[in-house]
Image 1 (cartoon, helix red, strand yellow):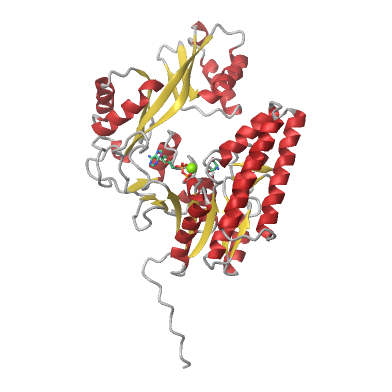
Image 2 (cartoon, protein in one colour):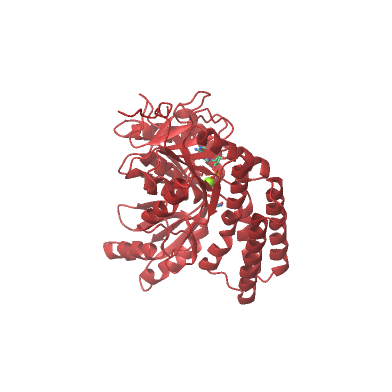
Length: 481
Ligand code: ADP
Ligand code: ASP
Ligand code: MG
């Protein structure tokens, strides 16, 4: 028998393949990008294959949206100035990451800014900014940061190759601004990235964006780079997806409004979806959906403390005894639209028409309540879509004796935790905490899954309400929960 080569010793639990996602703050400067690249290297030196997914440099996405609006309004000078500032920022970072002035990366960055400038000029000439052209413009943020990460990885001695979302195989529907991946995405992504991984490359994918069947660039909704990472993770059957953050994991509340929030050790996919939907900005609301079918774990990890476990998101997350609520979250900038009048009484198709119309218009409802006498229906929506909602309701309401009222300046506060299921007294504790702060409740809803209870309150009260509710459920503290 010939001698067998010594098996390579792989430390226990060493993942074979990880997808790592870096958000805007962690891509914000050459220094931040270098640190992010070092987090990739920590795993690759142990033999783990890593696919990197990146966001735009911090502030760039908002900047692109603003300059696109300015071009539509006719202020091309402002738009061009902003593009010039952005170009300098990307050039400086590239240079600091070792790119020579005549390098391929610098040429690529220059060309991308030129294309961006032309697209913005088109918007200015037409004075028209469609969701499709907005997506093209806003995608440049991620397209420009991906080559920067590739440079940093190269400086760390890793062979890498950067791709746009479309080049990585992400094919979406045509809901520009909020597109969803088509089922064929998964095999396409696998085909494209497996080849690179097999050739010893570390792929760097521009997050947030994909393309439609016709080749138009689409985006996956704000915060969509998390979604890109989980799409890629599911496509490649990665061992885990790690979203690196500037916080210590998924916390029991937004640490900016609740300083005593603590890291949650484990969350289920369902809990994460509820939290993200109700405003926990830390993850895109659909981010865990691609992982669910394959049971791929997601970790929310601290870039400042990479040895800390952060939050593990899995199907069967542990709930500690007595831990009915794991987190409190809130969405600001909400409006309540109330449709009322005798025209609703005993006419169920009115309500059906309202919901059909909203579904057709792709309007997200945060809460719905209908009074038992059926003389009114209240809908909580993001204030940004309130006008569109009222306009959409005009048709189903026409000719019926109904009136529409809007209340602005509202927030939705939600408590989330699988431990609420079957536990008595949770709602009483929530209402008690709000009463202590003398806060008036405008609407209440509990999902049938009993994973959350949400209340609409006045926006001015939401920060103090969040702190009070957080304390009332025993979440304040310094140790992870
Ligand atoms: P990234 O750019 O990495 O995607 P985001 O800014 O989208 O990061 O998300 C991280 C931010 O989310 C944190 O800085 C924090 O202020 C905010 N946040 C809101 N709710 C939570 C929560 N429950 N846990 C952790 N962070 C939260
Ligand atoms: N850059 C995009 C945004 O700001 C996507 C992301 O960061 O996840 O929404
Ligand atoms: Mg984000």
